[in-house]
Length: 387
Ligand code: GLV
Image 1 (spheres, rainbow, N blue to C red):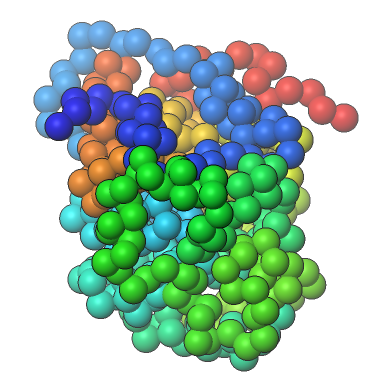
Image 2: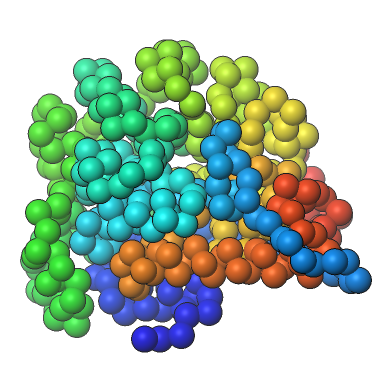
């Protein structure tokens, strides 16, 4: 058993053990990947304030997200095709999250269905919705999420059209993969992945197959997003969906102060400051750079979460110190899943939790709920002057 000390260790194993097309799907941004890179490198520009001679006993990372108790203020982000990183991946990740005491978010584009995940878990999870042209399908999936007891709807607002990720096109990404000569050659070295996949029946989009009408090419993410996703999605639709859902609503993909104000006005319970992990609008600013202005604008009106770029407990601490109430991780837990299945997701959560706990102690804090801007050193020009 390899000694895992960081998310990078899990990432290396993920790459070694998972078919290239799925590893690449996870580890890519759109076009030049500038925003994808900035999401991580902008965290590196922020430094921590070391404080000493502070009692470090009785530390706690326990908090709440949208009123729900959590072991630390972090949730697993919705990630498409998670069940292709490892057989039954969504069930494995959801189980690791519930044991650890953090929310799991199931993507509309998951391999395991809402019902599958509900059947294999005990605690409620969050459900992420992509709005489709087919209104009946949307109504139906909202009902399915209600029936499954989902405790929040995470509505993604930055992907009515899929950003172009070059690697996915070059690899011919499909779920399940087509058995072309390069794929067969790749799978020859990833035999454990293949054996597990042969043993599960969950190998295509579980929330769509048998539920959506008129999807021509079910295996291809890019063609069915182009055919099915509703490009007309606007704030009126958001209001209507809020009514239909009737429960906790989290709006994901907010990266602009004006949009954050609209989201607060609509009455969202939380917003997620996010650029979709750099997978949509390449050239947009990183989430952590946009966070301070959004906190200033709506921090007293709506709970603010942040995703895109969190790879460690230090990153998490920085986001919380700069005003986020919680964070989401996507790639960081997918690396764990691809590396070691459910155990790997647990490992990813343990790594980040430990980093958070020790870092906060060395910054002179004992309680994650007391974090503030005094804990970090931010370059004066960090937010930048953009005209
Ligand atoms: C879907 O959410 C994607 O980013 O591929």
